[in-house]
Amino acid sequence: RQWHSAVVIQAAYKGMKARHLLRGQHQAAVLIQSTYRMYRQYSFYQKLKWATKVIQEKYRANKKKQKALKHNELKKAETCTQTNFKDMNIRKQIEKQHQAAVIIQKHFKAFKIRKHYLHLKATVVSVQRRFRARTTIGTQAVPCIQSSYRDFKVQREIQDMHLAA
Image 1: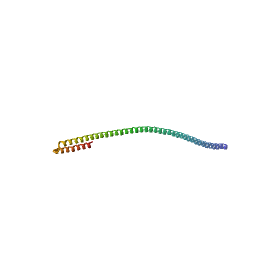
Image 2 (image 1 turned 30 degrees about the vertical axis):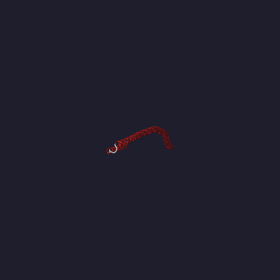
Image 3 (image 1 turned 90 degrees about the vertical axis):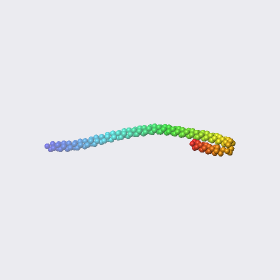
Image 4 (image 1 turned 120 degrees about the vertical axis):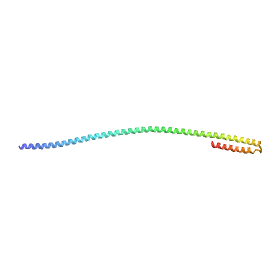
């Protein structure tokens, strides 16, 4: 009976020791599994992080390229618009200069015609005065006054023509 008690105690001790060892192995296995899962998740995270970084770099590079292309297109359009605007302004300026030249020519021709007209008129008036002076010496005060009045009236018309031009 002692032997049997010793065997029971030894069995209980060995069972306790085995359970304790099994518990330790189980905890170690859980720790190893947990660590491995953590490592696997971390590795997966690193791969995702790297892939994300690559995708972002490619996307940003593509976006930058598109922006540069669009900028170049806008620059070309801007240059074309500026050239057309400058050409239009030059055409307008030439047209204004042409109109100014036409106006100057018109006024100069009118000036020459007026000058010629005044010269002819002065000559005619001078001839008429001499003729009237010879034909009507002394007795004709009324025609002299009328002639002076007509001269005054003609000079006033001439001045009005000058002001109108």
